[in-house]
Length: 216
Image 1 (cartoon, rainbow, N blue to C red):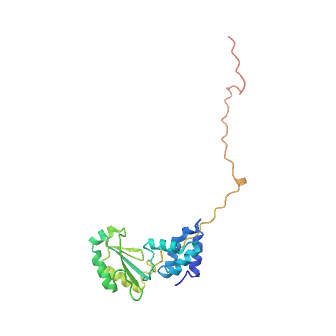
Image 2: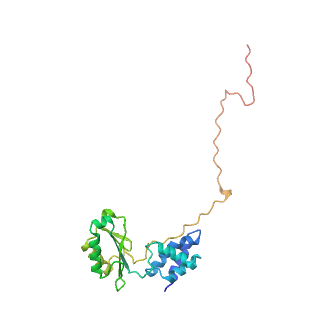
Image 3: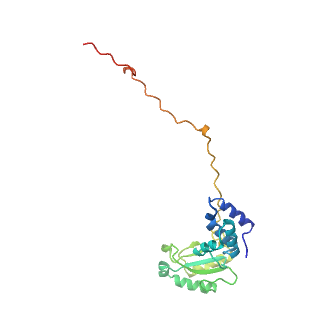
């Protein structure tokens, strides 16, 4: 079982440096491990625990909580078909049956060549575009049987690589630490501007001088 390779290890260290506490980088590092292998291998999770000073059970407990993290080998393209109410009323179960027939697998399975995994998903929050599905968590809406077949053909031919990266790649934008803020030395601080005093009224008596009494 693979651990993080050299490239992912460097990315992991850069990611850890973004956080004041190492354990806060657990979720991003799990995504890196899944990007490398397409799923979370036991050795990969153990390596993450070593990097973050966490027990293996802590890493496994977090990975098991989130459905996006797969702990079994997953196909290059994970197809998630929503069968919740809005999609169900729009024909989602019929679409799921068609997908099983087209791919030759049941929901929860993976094709023999490792190209596709199929799963039934809870609400994907795209109800006004039902029936919808995701491929590697990228949305496709108003999908009928013909649209599904065309999508699978495009994925098989590699025509969707620009918008559908392999499973495990959450984002192709790499995070970097912001430039450090250099504090300004105290001696360079500019003094607050002081408002100029209002001009004195020449008719007013000087301060501390009593006006003379007028003779009666």
